[in-house]
Figure 1 (tube, protein in one colour):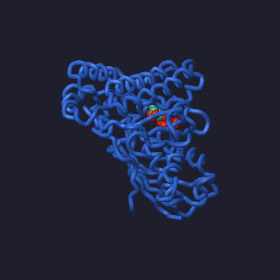
Figure 2 (cartoon, rainbow, N blue to C red):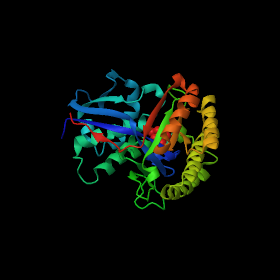
Figure 3 (cartoon, rainbow, N blue to C red):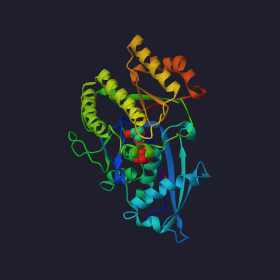
Figure 4 (cartoon, rainbow, N blue to C red):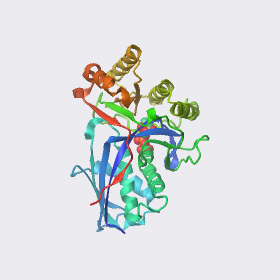
Length: 342
Ligand code: DP6
């Protein structure tokens, strides 16, 4: 048994959205994402002597500052994996974490945070070259936060049972194994920070509103169909088809929020202004840059590396006035998590 471990794990951006889940973090539909590179979390876990009778004894620090507010989600995660990770009940855990992106930037830190934590815990127990290490890490990460299951691998990653994907699973994510046109191998994501600060409605609460949602079943079927269409776009290098599906997925995600009961809105006026400007830029220049949204007001601008210069100029000159403090983060598709020797 190791007594300390540390990992760096990236965030990811979903192209086909996971929105709706069943008991035990089982997704209602399959999802596909790009793993990012520059937006990541670094976490270390140290096992110390336990001094209480509580089932779990642990402390969490973000940038060396205690964060008791993080404990609820982590405790739920520990409860779900306790059968397989018996040591969680035997030690006191010191969890230290730091994000590469500003904490209140509105970038989802649960995917990078929970995947880093799952990797730390698993590598206290198992060697990383053991068979199925990453599969188990993805399974544990899912039990911390669904989207975290996908951050265990680099590139395009799929999670959730899908008829057209051999070995797809609701329990863990798998690296996308279909043919990929080279244009999708070096893809960029500029995260446009429309509004920083925490969200009014958490993703976890949003997922649960899909339970009685009037359009839920149609939406879950659509995700399967969109995944098939996206496969074919990725294989052919068809950027236009890629963009149509990705933008439609983003708007559908937010449409689900607006038609939940209670209904809510996470887009802000500047989210819409940015989207309109992206459409205008594409119409006027034919540069293949497309947006997606996660469960918040920020906009992710996706484009192939060759368009970097044109998009960079557009972001700086046209979009940045709509962003909080004119801030954006230039990221690209990355290679997945890495263990840090300490
Ligand atoms: C909109 O993974 O944050 O980003 O499983 O409750 O932790 P929990 O939810 P979470 O949901 C992410 C939703 C999304 C879409 C996606 O990443 O696929």
